[in-house]
Image 1: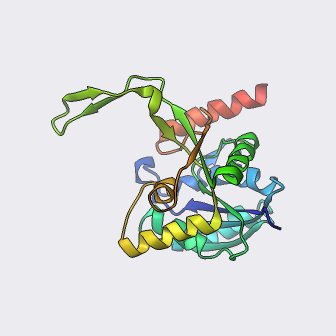
Image 2: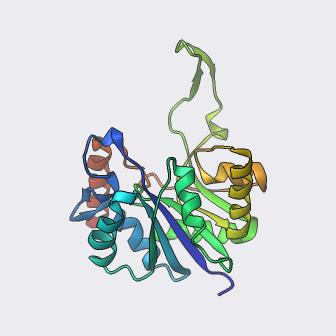
Length: 233
């Protein structure tokens, strides 16, 4: 299919700030593990025909049995071991995709509450521009500080966004960006940064306030409240 969308889910992080022996993607949110919520969206999105999960090596079998098999995710083709950093893990996932992949969505497994509507808009923009990411403008005043924690200057928050996932790209171009980054040993905190450096412009789509990344125990409390609110609508 010429316009297929394939997915790499980064779920290999240690989650040390969570203070739990269980990887945060497998902690319960409501009645199900966190990772299942984003898998639900991709599984039921018609354009997606394959999902790669990148997990910690010692959690691959757990992920297979307690997530993929238990909840019957038919589009998950492989669970592969991640690397030392997120960039290494995403690259491990990209290498599993066939060259006939048209578009790829890269997503953090700890962001459970993004919607199908957001994914649809990201794919539409990626088809036009080659790359699309969700971002939110800050509600708070933003300041730059020096090493001694004194304010250097106040930033223009109208031109600064907080970036989320999923991020959607033309597969061949993102793959090329990763190849060049590996050659130069260039490291970045998100996939769009590599695309910006080696390929070109990245389109921003308005993100969703519910699309938080679960990093601390407090984030689970917030996510649960958001989930409960959805069920009341």
